[in-house]
Structures are given as structure tokens and as C-alpha cells.
Length: 141
View 1 (cartoon, helix red, strand yellow):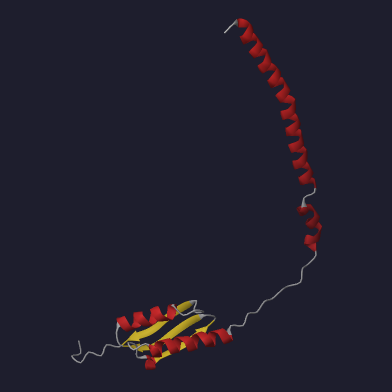
View 2 (cartoon, helix red, strand yellow):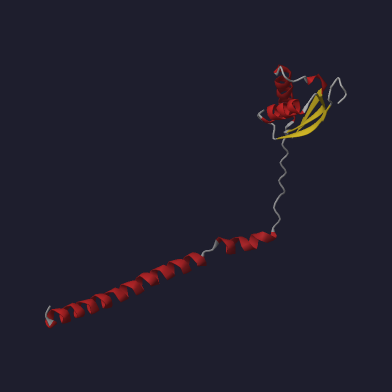
């Protein structure tokens, strides 16, 4: 390439860079003005004066009594329908979705089966195990 072509390209690059600088500065100025304008109308400043005024207290009381009774009925039905569980010695109470099981079971397999069935019932948030294992081994062992 000739020296004239290289000199012409160098001159063109300088012109392009010089033309770019004012545009970049203008873009930066617009961005800065936008950010400062947004900070000037900050909603936090408007609500700062309202922070001193007390807000009315809102109390929400949820009643789960009907839902708890329904969960208790579903647990009772599930346990009585299962042929591997003797549910006559188990009492079931539900409070705020927490199912509490108390009573006597024959072995650990029955206890785990009861717990697994109770956890599958919709509306039962937790299942508390208060079951006791009573081994009915005729040999006493």
C-alpha cells in the first residue's frame, strides 16, 4: 500500500474518532440528566413526611376449625379403610393443620404406614407422632 493511502486512512480514523467523541459525550450527558431527574423525584422523599403519621393496625384472624375437622375425618377414614392398620386404639386430633396421632400400634411397620398415609392427606401440614409400640409377642421376647 502506498504511503498516501495509509495517510488517508489515518486521517479518516482521526475524523471518525473526533466525530464520535461529541456524540459519546452527548449520550453520557443525556444518561446523567435522566438519572439525576429520576433521583430528584424519589418517592422515598415524598413518603418521609408521612412516616410520622400512625397507620391503623390490621389484624387478620384465620379460622381453620372446619378445615381441621375435615382433615381429622379424612385421617380417620383413611386409617379405618386400610386393612393392615388396627385404628381402634389411635386417637387423632388436628389443630391448624397439624395432625397429632396418639395411641398404641402393634409394630414399627404399622406405625410407619400410619405416618405415611397421614402425610399424604391434603390439608395436613405436619404429622406429630405420639404413637407407642406395644409388642404382642407371645414368647415375651
